[in-house]
Image (cartoon, rainbow, N blue to C red; front, side):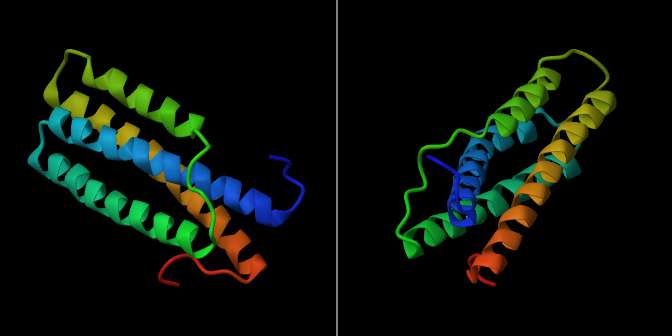
Length: 133
């Protein structure tokens, strides 16, 4: 796809986020399972429920705009998940491993914040709304 309009960039970024969220649907249960702290497990389970909602909203946006959600792999999220998976394979003190899992989770959250902030700005510039706005 030639990115020659803000509209095309917007759709491209939405596809990236959609793929990222779907990757998280698979990764978050593993992160929850790997956490030793009940509070940390709960945080990842809550994030999973939020991610399910995000996927539904993105699918709604693609339907409303008559666009396909497919076709883009989010390499950034793939890398962040791979990095987080490495900590799950480590041996060590449970609290230290939990801290490593928290770091991985924060990296994912910051990526999501940047991605959604960008598409929200694009949507406003294009006169569109994201889901429940």
